[in-house]
Amino acid sequence: MKLSRPVSWFLLAFGVWSWVVWTTFVKNLIKDASGLAFDDGDPTAYFWVHLTLAITSFILGTAIGVIGFRGIRAHAKKPRPSATGEALERG
Image 1 (cartoon, rainbow, N blue to C red):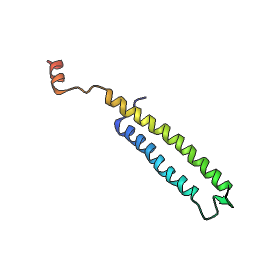
Image 2: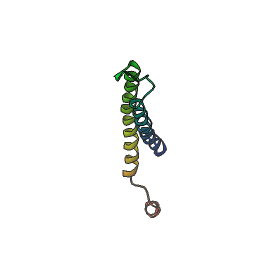
Image 3: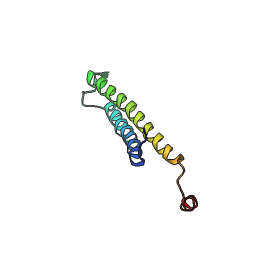
Image 4: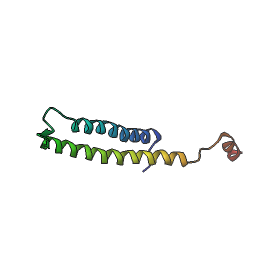
């Protein structure tokens, strides 16, 4: 399947965005002082569920970002016809 350049950039941006958002979320989850994530220093079910969500999102964000990166790289490798080259071919 061929991806367009805009779709490839969107997928790459989605992967990066996923890492930014979920990294921030995990940092905040670890620092939680409200008692939701930790009960007397022990992780709660809330912590484990949200950590699992974050890990899943890291994996999916990475996979989506890699697909986007490969699409961008494929477009970069493709030779673009130059104006002079087209004129010579039509010649």
